[in-house]
Length: 106
Image (cartoon, rainbow, N blue to C red; front, side, top):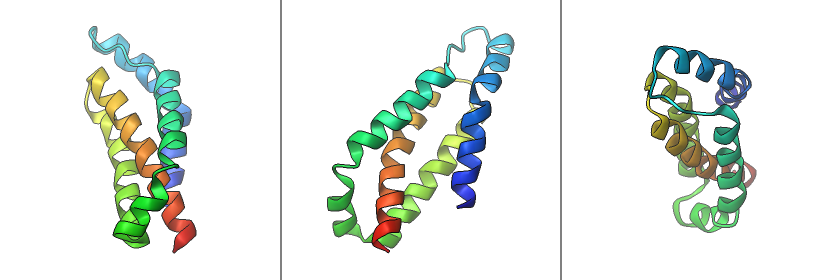
């Protein structure tokens, strides 16, 4: 739950942080709204695959992988590359499906 709370807080202030990063780094073109759209699109699509993956690797490992992707998304703000933001957004969408479906199975 603490990992999800950190993600939600990060998601709420993401656009403000990205605006500040654009002021400091000229070649940074990230967008918080696009990032969150990628997160939830990947989450919706990967929810179809999550039950099969959880059956193969188990709910504990699924939750561990999902939690790691939440941490990765939060840590991506240390890197000032636009592609890092969007790749991390896609990964957390996939990880969130494993995390929440695994939690329901555990």
